[in-house]
Amino acid sequence: MNGLDTTLAALADPTRRAILARLAKGEATVTQLCAPFSISQPAISRHLRVLEDAGLIVRRVDGQRRPCRLAPDALGELDAYLAMLRKGMERTYERLDQLLAATTSRKERS
Image (spheres, rainbow, N blue to C red):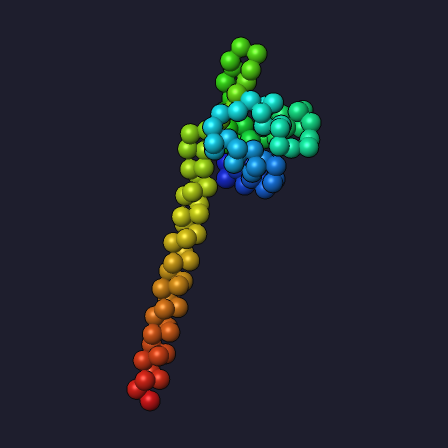
């Protein structure tokens, strides 16, 4: 899988998206991340591994703790992909606007 595919696969899971939303508020340990979920700590750790492998989070060692945080520019490739799609959609809407304007203009002349 390429980077974008890995990122999208990681984001496909609602638990992982919720973990990222929590980390957007600040660094957290696995124990802190487990609190709102009704799943085990090992299950959260597996989700964190997927997020880490996708480059979305980073962990650091702090004694016995391994706090997680969002990776800097983790969504750069996804942002670029979405920007390309937005630009394509904007061109489509501009062509539609031109078509509607031309149609309206013809009706007004008739």
